[in-house]
Image (cartoon, rainbow, N blue to C red; front, side, top):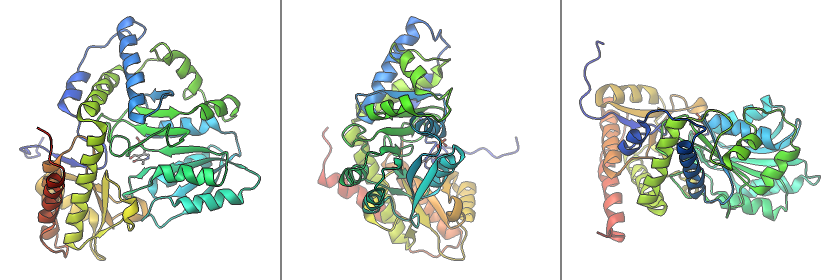
Length: 398
Ligand code: PLP
């Protein structure tokens, strides 16, 4: 091709897909095997039990060879019947898409609106559920980490809202960009269906989805009437009981998953979450110093996986992204739907560390200058201070 060589590493700073660790890449580079044989069974059992530790559940986690959207569909079709009411919160573009799916499946979605600058408000959910005196709402669906807006919802508060309203609806969440970046306790937080994907905090290529399912959701699946076949949970669960799949599994990705789970535990989940929190704080310090606006307007909802940054009126975030890519070989996330051209996103999730994020912020600060976007200098300096401060407070054990 005519494209000039790009020396060094591409900075993939979008909020997924994220860079895949070398050990995961090597683990996937294996010959095919008999997916009905003993070697596969060992792998199947290993990933099916390992993934439960990431969701903090003792129940089943279903692994589909699909992107996260497939698991969304499975969550709705396995538990609900045509015309069922579901309560959704429009936290951003991914909530919009999940609602669109509910519409297409013949469900009746009731939507709590937001301005896409906060997460889901537990008080509003509680109030909405209290008004549903006939208990017609069958599920409450909340996006954990809204990748478009950079807002994360504390899910334990949503559970408490359902309990406070004494409402029997299923609690479903999409943690496609939250898993592996922030704590997630499927069992303890009383979540019924937790949906995620491989290409973000799990540090894998796109192509696998994960669905943790509670006893209550399994019970609902026995009477739910929406049509489902490939995405039916029951074939999957009966085969998984022995480490197998009802159809040809994505063996290459499963080798990678086995390794990715090992990596997360080698670092320690709490350390993984602390790292993401630090990188999020460093990124926000840079944005504030630049004098740009963080889209998430309430610190309670700050995402530790992605920061959505608003550019000043009259400037185009996509022009900034194009300049950054062309000049510094860094991919930043685009603004989605109503944030298009108004915002760009800095991903700080997955297999990333202090220096990759510092490099990314340096690239953004230089790009702001070259793009002529009004800002103050010193964002990179401010981010460095957040990182060193956090290390002084909790020095690392040797
Ligand atoms: N939900 C959230 C929060 C996401 O971030 C994404 C993808 O970015 C999706 C859903 C859709 O997942 P997928 O693209 O894997 O189907």
